[in-house]
Image (cartoon, rainbow, N blue to C red; front, side, top):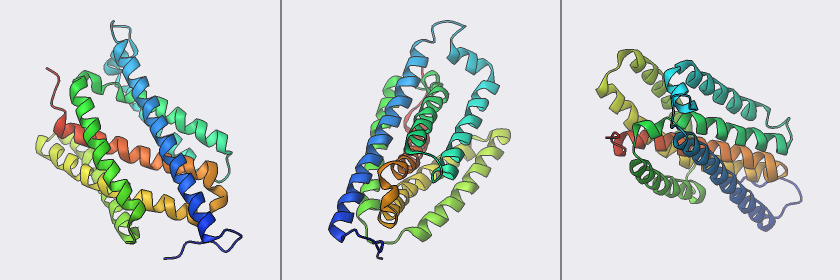
Length: 237
């Protein structure tokens, strides 16, 4: 497939530009993950009294769900308004999302040990790295796979919602296993999609596309991590 736009870019200069934007994507994604990890750790580390935010969030579930709604709103805002907003605003919203996600994820420090979280993070990084490299270098068109995976993701969300009320442990393991497989595939597909978008519209590549790509891969990484944590985390003693 040929993604070269009909403009002044030569194939060599376009390849260099795409390589540059992918570096920016991974840098923003890494910084977003770092912000999330720091916020989560700080919230968990300061949970030394009944007045801490983590304890308050655990005791008042509406706070947790309210933050989750804010996260969804930010993702929709960034995705839908990317072409209209400035690069600086898009980047600011992305890091705001990383902060809010750090607040919600701080609760995992109550459920899992730091050792288990760190071990799962390393496993996630290895799997994610392998799949994003595959997505970047493969010549196979992953479009159909991506469409199927998004349909499967909607099905997974429905199963997860049903199981909130059903509370079936077997179904929870099934959901976790399917989640791992889906986000492994989405990591490769999103990587290829971002690369194709950079080839198709180099004028957007420097800022806004890097933010959109970072957000997509950030979500793939976080979700893969959370589903793997169900298998490798165990419970805090």
